[in-house]
Length: 129
Image 1 (cartoon, rainbow, N blue to C red):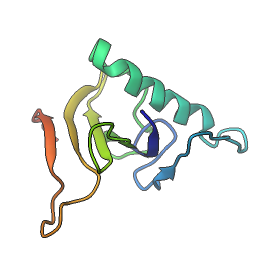
Image 2: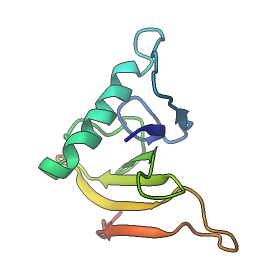
Image 3: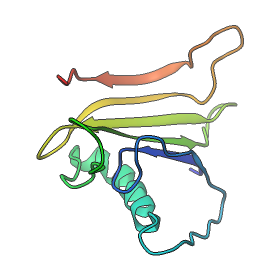
Image 4: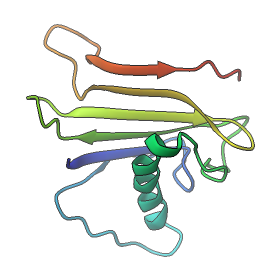
């Protein structure tokens, strides 16, 4: 399964207004020290392991957020059985050990005539602010 794009918000060195990072079959990550190269790779590792462990590492929330930050990872992947790519979203929040507060699989784009994407899986837990 090919990851086409990834967006990180409030995750490690990625703040609350990060941009979507487009990805291809082969990617070269370059940048100065402290620019988030390793954090990008850690986000992909987290996505690979979250279904097995159902836990989010305690130190993955962006330290610059006010209050209790809600971090999110959003990746667009190839849909092997369909015509449209899928978006996987994972959100987590908390102090100490973060809790997964939202997880969903949806179509990358809304179908014609709709403003919302098709949702194939959704799990939402209320997290008090």
